[in-house]
Image 1: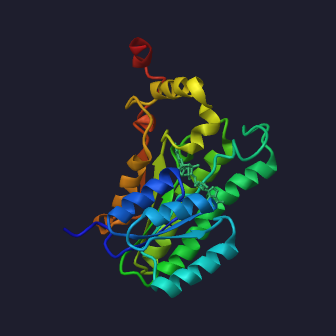
Image 2: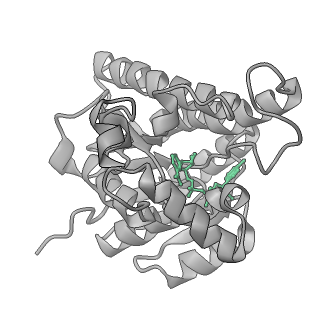
Image 3: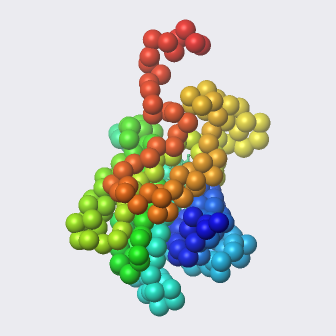
Length: 271
Ligand code: NAD
């Protein structure tokens, strides 16, 4: 049987661990040649070496345009095209910067850093992605936003703002490509509460960590946090030609968190 990404050349940003690594594994197992990229060289290289189909690793800081330029030159030279780009790299800023992240007390440097990686990184990815994808027969950009891009997050204002902007920019890119007749679709994915290292700063370690995970689970309608593969399989659908009529859309993967509100009258009775 033909694999779902047979003969596709795929690039994943932030691919060394977490959701990105799961995307790389699932895509490679579906026949893709995966270009794993990240700022974590050792982890990224180790992953690429385990993957089939001549998958490779390249260092890429998504916030640096010259690195996108250089890598897109390499991809065009080596492969002639890119078929799928998953713009996955992202940070909350909570571990990477000092100080509060609420709208009243945030530090402007921290705000800029979060937007540089999350938003500039995706915008540059789309810019160079389009450049690499024009020669593809059927290309797909999958931008990893967040459920935090759809609601307010008082303790992570920059993160929420950057993720909301990704949601909107994905639609702009989708329309731009469609109106120019490019063979490129663009959609966003909105994960929520997926257990990866991004949560380490919030969940802590040891016995407290398990208690924190259980506490989180109480807020998730499905009753537990998600796994990176839950996002990877949705990305697989959007990356493959099975979704050839889908562009400018958004897919929430959050165990039902955004489906309702905890302020419903039933909530108290159930507790
Ligand atoms: P993670 O921290 O495990 O992975 C993020 C990856 O991005 C890491 O490999 C990291 O090295 C890389 N990265 C960070 N800065 C980079 C840069 N400047 N250039 C290139 N790579 C960089 O977290 P994750 O949960 O796997 O997150 C992946 C994406 O999913 C992020 O965009 C995150 O915002 C999003 N997301 C995650 C969740 C969740 O619950 N885990 C929820 C919503 C959205």
